Image (cartoon, rainbow, N blue to C red; front, side, top):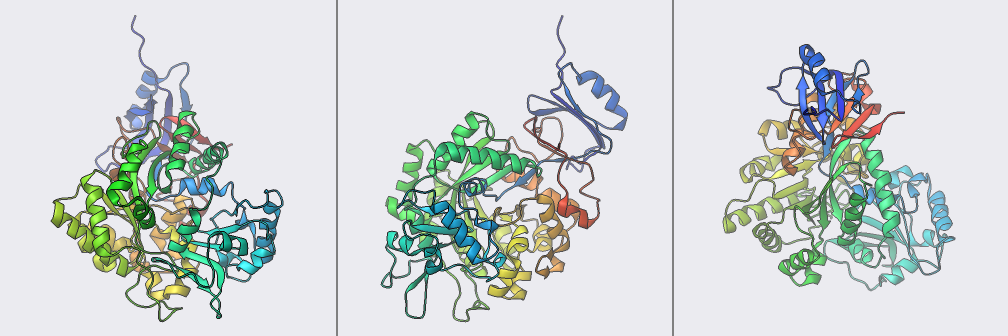
Length: 544
């Protein structure tokens, strides 16, 4: 007798948002071996349950359940967030004295001479002083350890021992693509930005692999609890990739990750050329598409300009009238590097926020296409693309994908207004124009810089409300459009097996809610989290 196949998981809901506009109404799904194998509407639920239920089938059928595809966040720093678990938790500080105290506490348990490094997920606006600490203030924590207080991905503050270890003094020139902040007498204050921070980070020892893998497992579980099924992690090192591989092998990942090797211009120059840099990665077994299970290598991450403090702008900064931001690449060098990557099959995501940087990047991509012919879709990606409104047409013509993050206005809105002014800040992430232009665009958070919960980002995308006020309401889009950018559009960038839809043949990545995210009141989105998240057919999270 042939035994009929049974489902690993059955879900019966009031609504299943399949994200397929041609789909008939669906209220039940059957899952087997990580894939959706059957779907049914209200009239077919009984037959589906009878056909697929077995003695070991898990059944989710609480009244009122609403199912979405698990979210695809196309720019989310899972590895940095995992590293933050191991760093000094300065996000807990509410003034500089508390921050220094947290550093002191860690230094007391760290052997003399070893680096003390903070987590990066915080901002100085949370401090009573509303500024970064200085080297002299950090010296109050320790003079026996070099200290690096990271803030986000572009800024850090060193104590005096850290400045000494990095070889930074009054006579040290600024490095291209970054700066060293100095007092009126020309002495470094401790704050290093952009390229200057990259140089410091080269001195840091790698984090212990076992502890980092544990932090990765803890962080991935928290991501699943917010309905995330997939992230594209845009800044890891080769050694962190090896940690990723080992974590995947022992089942420590509970969300999918498409990783990108952080490739600053300085690292490429140190290798001698972009070809030599790619040769090194490939000799280490790091190539686009490698990985298994929930892990894949996507490609490279370049950085063209800075963030709040150093994005390359056409007009000067509001708080620094003689400053226009930083460009870390010349157009010719960037064109050559991108052309080489495309020819060798390496996708590249390029961080760029300012309008001047976006113009340079699009011009470089046009030159690449003129030199080598059509660029495969999704190979060159604009990461952030904040002030892109006037160049959307060029992005459409070149077939460039954009990953945009409304959550940055949530996490950095007030800082952006101070640095750029209200008008430019309100122009960031022009969702309405992006959607109407039919440019390839997907949504994300840039976590830990922006809040993690996709629903909070969707609230901002649809209302343009931020902690700094209403910014650019004309750029708001509809709820279903926002969810589509967070599911189908992200899956289109990442490719198989992801689809961002819920239909037979799609991966069983589900975010299951007790309220409908597409119709609930705006205010409820802030705290809305799933009751259950399923990734690859497994329960990655279930609310207690």
